[in-house]
Length: 384
Image (cartoon, rainbow, N blue to C red; front, side, top):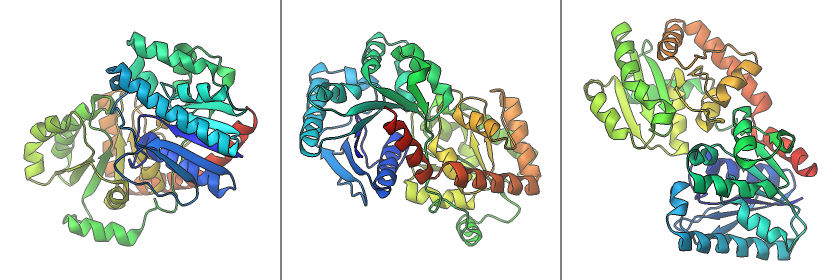
């Protein structure tokens, strides 16, 4: 098949989220013999792909979905650039499928270009566009444009009801196709575990708890100061590494100042994906205290692929996946106290941590490699 993946309002060079998703899915589909083109705006950095082909547009990402609607002229100009690129590509190669990433604004170039081509269209909902559109009439109206797409995909059942309600389509048009992880890159190496821990003077008795993600309220970041203080009271061998950037970064710095000074907490800031592997390797437990229905956090897959046991809330796709996979579910009912109890249970039971982590690794190998995800999308594309 000849497939175009269209990523609007995101730079393909970013190491996480839908940017990473689009890049990895495109590469996996191309490895399976498909002719894959990725259309994205990455004006400041050349992006090199090994298997898929890159169509790099000279447009600036808006930064957030709400920002797309601050300047109508800029939005129209950006949509026009994407539309022209897609029309040109289809004229040259006769596309079979255009898969737009996100359902907000992104479908417009695909639906316009479809008037002049014979390709099928599908939209992948990553969750941020529906979440940010709630309560915003303009954004909600733009979401309904996606009704005209031939099909939909999302990586978690938690987001299906939002698509049905906000886009206005039936569940029969929505496919569940999980995100993936590079299982060869993200794997635990005992030698690296010891090596990287020495860099931070960590002993074998220390238990390292890792958080990685945007430092925003939806990710449960406001739980972290209380969690650190309570864990330190219970066991001073617990260390916290916090990777990420966002609006609550300064808040964490203030609340955790004493713990940062005594090296109980390490605030890492934004970490490139290649470097984040180091912190998966030196950690013992990964935490994801999200308080919104996040479809599927990429960092959770990476952590599980590295054999890290995880503690999560009941919100979002990760919890549902653990339940469905009948894995040992350290899942809370969105209660801070239960989250703390589950974390401490893992801290105090090393053998359970190890067994849980090994089971998660096996589960990821069988279900979440990018090749497995690409196979699912092949079937979805064929049925459009």
